[in-house]
Length: 381
Image 1 (cartoon, rainbow, N blue to C red):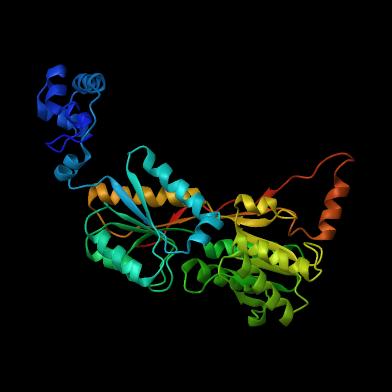
Image 2 (tube, rainbow, N blue to C red):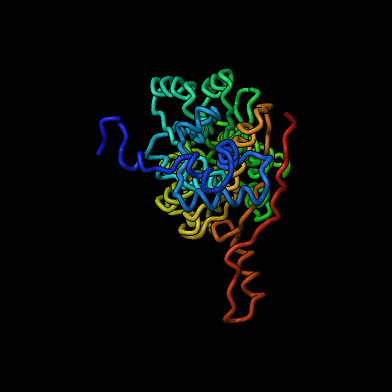
């Protein structure tokens, strides 16, 4: 119920700063400093104020606090992808989990935006520029999207997930996609595979470009030629993996290995191979990229490149909160290491037989083997 003065009974009965100050025996200004986490308050005074606030059931007025601090205690997470892909691709929920973990301690709210068209993105840009959030995390950008630079020009702190294609002065956190792809190709070469193909990601995204370049670099390092007939571009979806593998087999039926640059695409690739009567890994070895739980459900379990998805989300959040609190928006570039996780989808048949003979009867083989991950590193700004 709302009273004639516009307030509800709960609002009229809400404890005030003055009441907390009176009970704690301090000034209203001191209570305000404690509530807002300001320094220059003794430990005993802080404890007295916190006890008084708890006893009275004091709840800070976020609107009033926002007027004083000029902050909303909320950040925006922008993911311009179709809703179906957001819910089907395990990368996104894991990234959001990392972001929310990064926001848990400071108590900042997360607002999710998923613009589905250029018109919606233009409206979103106006909304964000209106001061409704303190900063923005941008994920899964395609091409030379002007949104992050536009927000930056408005003075809004921005952190990207992934290296932007444009050479822009923007902060980002990324996995070492190129090195991860090199790890995948090197592993396939070591397994004795001769015709190694790839289903790459979209070439309007930094991850897609870097993983394709890593595939090529891995081949060159092994003294193998780079053959365009062994490359197919996908879209990080299950269907993209199916279509890409079908096209590769039409051109090169002699393929005996494929590096697929996302785990969902890898599952689609394995489906296409089964439909053509190809056995994994006996006929074609498969390596994916992500290391999400879906890779363990594959038959056989999927060898993959692990990227630290939750850590990506936490580090993006840490950088953004740091920019908000300090006002320092100088670009920072953080690149996290990747790790090869070896499972049954890529192990050469002779190698598996040698390993099985080395184990006594009744023993079990390890579920997976790991290579040593790369260390997180900062790229020069």
